[in-house]
Amino acid sequence: MTDPALVCSAKACRRTATRALRWNNPRLHAPERRKVWLACDEHVESLSDFLSLRGFLRDVIDVDELD
Image (tube, rainbow, N blue to C red; front, side):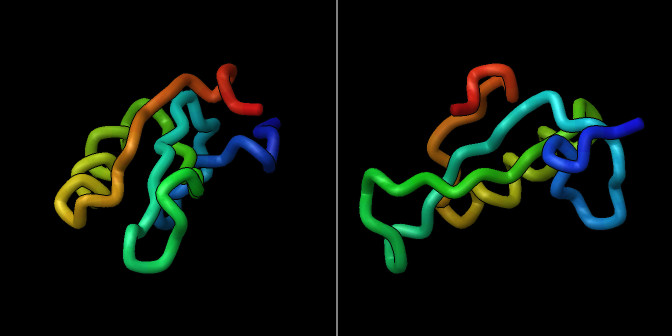
């Protein structure tokens, strides 16, 4: 069974996330604020690309490193 706290953020994906994409929108968030999208191995690249194109992606870490 998948831990509901660690489900990939990609639309309609229910896989267990392995990576955390930490991001912020500089127009809306303070520079130190980090929002988190979770990604499975299949979607980490596409979600990273989406955030990077908008200038929002700050870093990608293993979910084990999340607080």
